[in-house]
Image (tube, rainbow over all chains, first blue to last red; front, top):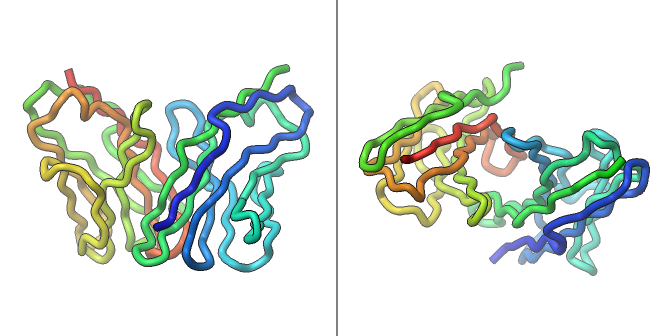
Length: 113
Length: 112
């Protein structure tokens, strides 16, 4: 059965420094993977998706993620954090058989000035 | 292109009552999913509808039900409300079940 594990529940960075949000997945086949962001009291916004094309995926707002099959990882990165990046981030895998979206527990990103 | 629209945005209900939440997907999207988000349990899948048929169902009691209309709009109903049903209910639409999902702003349900 597919699952995702977000390795950090909270990450704190200073504005202008790099961001790394870690996600490991388990999947029987070649998975579809996504990162979503949720700002307070808002819905989820798609940041980027991996669907077995290029392993380095570029998303919106300067975020990118690299699919590493050997490490079963799909970490989210950004070279320089902005105050507006403070939010909750969810790593998501799509179930192979049912296409259900399986969410990680989320990582809360704090950005300090 | 309009996004996913959920109504109402906020709702306060009393224990024992029932509630109906509405979701209008992005035009052309035939798949609608519902999720419950709480601080303790995170995001939990409720059910998914595709072309008016329930395609997937999560592990929620029968008090939670849904349906989808021919125009792809979906409703979710919760009967005999309990305090623990207080949550943010999110709706997501997809063109097909194997594509990325687009989420609405959610309906914040408070049960008192």
